[in-house]
Length: 396
Image (cartoon, rainbow, N blue to C red):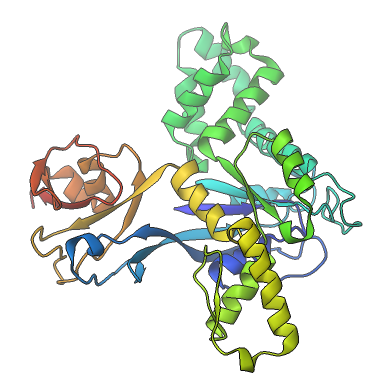
């Protein structure tokens, strides 16, 4: 599971990445600070089932804090994207290549309007952030278009002659980008270009590319630097884009996480407040700064960073959390760990899908599953629900 952090230079991508992961990344007030992609691990939250079973879990692939399971998600912060990146401008080629395996994208937009279209600092409010949303969509569409156009005329001709299916040909082209055949088929159906494939034309293909992005690499918008912007800016952005938009301040989130790590405050990412552990250890300026952050939290509900991650994983990608175990009575694995692993899987996944997620041999040898909550036997096509705890029985 990988989420890409994208956007033009100097909008706070690396700050967002650091706030979400506390991993190191270079930050500066000029374009192309990020050259090599930064990779780190962030966490999304889910209620841990140990609360329901009245046991204490011993997590293996995730964390559990106060009954909340923290499930790891890989983040990648890539080089800033500028107009015409698909032609190689800026660091465009590297940017696009780094995003090949990202399942979803969080587009960091400077809501304060203090950076122009190429990421150069400009006076506060002088740039329309809505334009940044448009240009990123165009760049990804043209990137996909360049992939399609390689031997496209041959594919179109053979498709119209009945020698191959265009859906299968495009699926082969986009497999390397982590876009699945069902996602390609959905994009083609929605594009509804009709007629002969050879007559789809450039406009039709660009429309298809936009839908390939929608289905294969969905985007959520983090309206960053919201602490510097007025409410009008967020309202305007909502008017010009139909994507999910989250008001955010990565800088405030980073400050809170660093203060929490230093033991100065008690803060849970995603919360709308925090507690100061030792006010006497803070200067008056630090106390004032924390109170300003508290005001933002109470107005916006959170800094938005954790919300963006969880919206991307649970809403945009439509994933659920399930817990496979080997012993349905004690909820343990072969090492005796209780509720050890939490897996993110697509909503609608079956018991057999979970078996394959755990290990190929379990999927191939699947016999039945057991729902540990109800103790009922479930079949291979049984659709799993969020929070399910499942034992897989398979041929060995």
